[in-house]
Length: 94
Image (cartoon, rainbow, N blue to C red):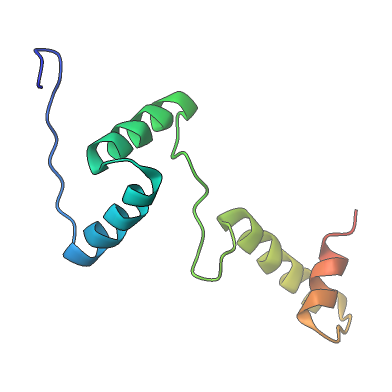
């Protein structure tokens, strides 16, 4: 029921995204409208997006920047690493 204080919003999204999102929400016992309301309320509460943005590789923007800086630092120091894990371990040392 729409009351005097409620406002309606409309969004357009591709069918595949909507279908996949509805499957997740069904498993959670939630409908799309409730999920959007929850998202907006949480966004207001934290004053930002209520989740960390991640790239396709799963790294957060912060971790991507750390890795980038580590690579530059390693190149400048002329150290040689046998693999990426060794590079990251060295970069994360205090």
